[in-house]
Image (cartoon, rainbow, N blue to C red; front, side):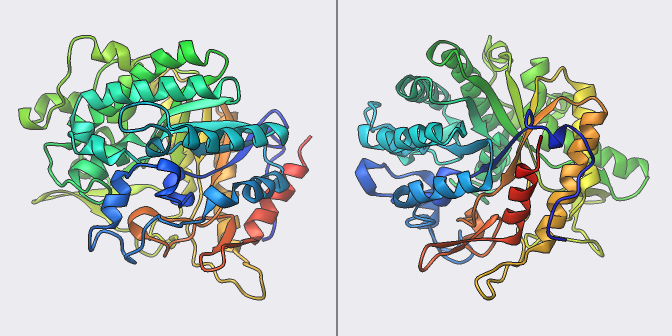
Length: 444
């Protein structure tokens, strides 16, 4: 397979937004350039044993210097939109003032995207918290939510009308659970009492930022990006079904239910006090700010089993998996989108991330990643099916534009439509990039 074969649906319409996505720490490099402050990921990378290949983001894809050629490459694909994030430590100084050099970097990108007629979808927080704020407690400190609000106010005011869409946060689950409870991501804290507390302050930060954006950037769309890993039972036993439901409330519904229902899932009632978030009067009303859109990130599903030692996640066996070891299972994406639409009164949805790491090989200056094309094919079909079942999906972003720093995995996993030689910084479009390009040029 070297092209996408999709049903004759809205996915073939130019009214449907297609894009590619990246994040600041994963591609920019230049971690000490032009007054950029240290982030929690700089610190985490410098901690032995945290990154699998002992790498860091100091150079990454050197997008800080190669941004113009990268945007030319994005434009060549024919996309409507580019989703990227702002590095908080690059644009805000320690005293809270704007770092004009950092702001100028993003202004240049925004203005060039405008010249190319590519809509800018900007994410304010894709995990790179300034280290000095982490030193004050990070997302365990309620004040960080207000620091975030101030950062959003200053940067959105500086950008003016150049941004089509703002997302406050990307995947608060990853920041809260992986960063503060499981210790897998920066800042690397590993305490069961921390996860839900950090999550609450992240969601509070989102709500506060939504209030601010209504004033500083009234003409842009405002929303949030959540990741979902649908939870399935290993068997039809009541115990396994209950395990899956509990896991779904813990890992998925915990982050979306407050946005629409103004409360956390009922599992909060049985949680030990030490694990519960510190909810102040008025917090849930702030968090429940009306959304112009919801960003949905989907990659895979998880399977759970109830055991004598508690709930365990069962690794996939005898199924297609990606290079991350994640099951390729597009039906879960369809079921997720339909179930969310039934459960909540949703705004328009963008699929803000979907993609796969594959074991790519550069042979004769080409990467024939047919497995990635098949992954995209299946998941675009799921999106089309969800639309026919009444889900208001208005756009789709492939993750990722190019291979990059894959967090705790370092540079060993490649998600890109474009292959990056990290030694030479040469970019090579993979077969999946050409297939995506063909899909976009065929729209009517």
